[in-house]
Length: 312
Length: 325
Image (cartoon, rainbow over all chains, first blue to last red):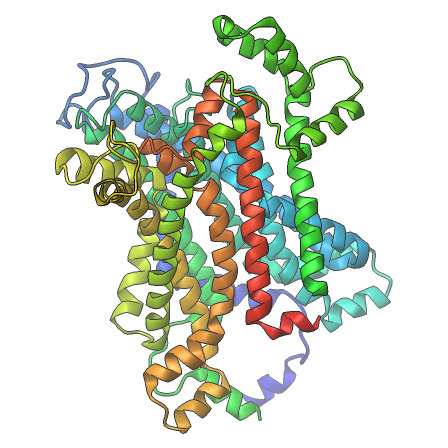
């Protein structure tokens, strides 16, 4: 036991160890497992949609405004479309846009945050200024204005959401990168003459894995929700089938006033389930990486307090 | 003081950026806004108005820097042009008649959500693992996962259509004269309940979790142990010692929340046809009313920036550390 401990190389700035325990922590975390299970189901539904409901989901197949029944599990819209088919097919566009927006905004956030933290001085000042301005510009109104000027379409929606969504991730990633930038192993890399790009992406970035993941999840949630909002306002491409557009049509065809609750409930619940699942994974990431937030079994003396007094 | 001047400079730059964005959008976007507008509202627009619009939107032949200077001059003299969809009302007049409703709706919702959410967060962190701490966060996070326009639709359907407890649209009953009478104020209040409630429901979870997490960090500080050792009452330690020091991030969120007040209630306003700036912005977009659209965007941005600046000043009062650097 003691020999094994002694044999371990003492200072390990290497990334492997914390990462492995991070993955292990996630897998043994109930929140993370629930979240991942829900996501797997939705992704499977999205991939299988053309098999489950072949053909155009928005074609009219039945009487208008039918209540849920054995034939139409979720009823039909005021036009006579099958709500279940619309909902299952809607997951394709919604998940795709959410994922694309999430990846793109996180990517920009990583670039801006790392450059800011690594170069500092003027570059940091300039990038932070731009980031803060974008953070302050009111997102939803800007979204609406941009969508109004650009031709409607999936590309526009993604572009608009990335433009209004990257700043938050840049700010979070910058502050994390700043604290790693000041660590000794980064200084060592700088002194040993490593190239800037290598230090940023090979030394600093791997140590930010958990926060990058948290940011990505938050950006995907933002993307899915904002797309739904934009489309609900009729500013997306109304001819495509997505959860946001389903809600737009539900509102447009007066589903609320005629009492056809089954038309607007499914898409909203799907958005909420996906967002909740991603939020669960996000909280799990927080819990695994921040011991203070973990559930404490003995509330008498918090571990943090013991540690602090022991350190003195 | 230096800190405040620096912040002021930052907000001026941010405002300049949004003005410039407003200036650039119609010029670099595909399509000619004036032609599109003309096609929509032929019967209402006179040729000289089209000329004036071309000037305002900068689709005339002058060099771009000249248009830019002219545009800035117009903004600072409060000339935002004339609304197309409500011709011939000036844009400024349309906006000033509506911003009050937005402030009322967003402000009420923000204050309620912030106060209740923070209190819940304080209690949850103080009683780690207690009933509030274990039951509320997951529920609130789940509710917060719903798109808030969807919750608004649900509330409208349940409490408005099915149960009929609350009115489902507009800010007050049609035909009622706005006046400072109890009858009118009560009517406005009744119209406010559902839209405000949905915003509170969606945002309260964020407040609670934010406060809870900073409180947990504060609770392990030495001065809390010290206060406990001194034998102070728990309630006093919780509020005066722990919560007070955990408040600062919440103040920042409140500043960001003020921004949400003006721009963020947009979807809720649309669902309830609430006559605020957000609802008007959507109408302007649908009616291709570019002058009104731009005026609204600038007003919303200016309000957001102003609110954040005020919070910054407040922050300097609250946190002495900011003053020193």
